Image (cartoon, rainbow, N blue to C red; front, side):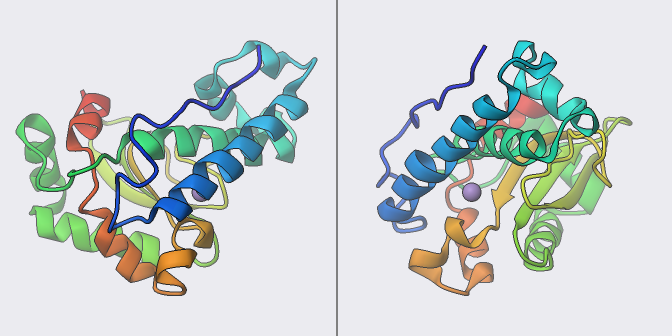
Length: 199
Ligand code: MN
């Protein structure tokens, strides 16, 4: 099977002023599309061509670097578009909120630690909120297009929330100000989607 790029469930301009339309358009239609195309080329005729993107990530150490980079790119961006929404933000509720408070002490403390994970990721990568194998919440970051689902990740778990901290995610509007972009990200988080992944 080959992978395809799913249209966003909202317009490119829908996350303004926090994430600008031009960045969203290039990010989705050029960057994500390229990961999909390159992934399809890398897995054509191999065992990976029969696997889901989750299975590919979980077995990533068996595959060449092109599958790791582009498979991660496809998985990560597919999640990223869904954990954002217009008029998002606010606070998580229910079991997710309880788990955040239990793991980090408070929502503010969680936010501080998540922002730090993104800010201190040198070069390109992602900040993550994950559920680990003990069903506990953890914050981590990965380089490049790696993710915590990958068998070779330093910190492993199921990704619930991810923030893309590659410059292509923010440079047009925020230039070098990654922390400003991350501050804005909290205004577009789709907590219903994060809660769905947590449950
Ligand atoms: Mn990206």
